[in-house]
Image (cartoon, rainbow, N blue to C red; front, side, top):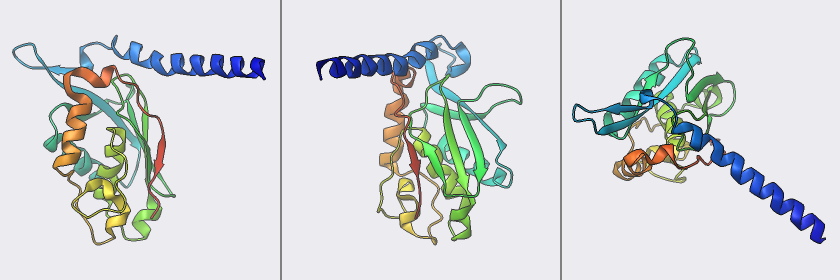
Length: 196
């Protein structure tokens, strides 16, 4: 029994060290990961996304990204040039939407699956996209919730088209990416499935 506990503790320590390794690598990412103002002060963490595998969702992705970029200052989402590494992989699937829970860091990895099953049931593509990106930026679901909360997701019903994070959601993302903290704090890594 004691031998088993030692192995379990050693495995836990290894897992903790492995989960911290990307954070160390993230600090070595060059200036591309943070925009710099004219005064030389870091203005925003820049995260690149690749939506080359999300055909049929282009307009919703553009609108969902714009929703976040227009409502928060400490992080900006930009499309990765073809052939370059992106922190956020966006793909179209036939299932329910799902995403990895962040906050994703520069140099890290996150995934968004834009599931057509939710669209078939009447949910808005732009709201789905903005909601799933919210998970990558560190926001959990707030189900059940009103339409005014982006992270209430499908619980707000199919008539809800709101794709804008409310003031509380905006503040949480701002805090997660303020002062470069996203480059230091490991992401949760959980996958959140937004089934109705």
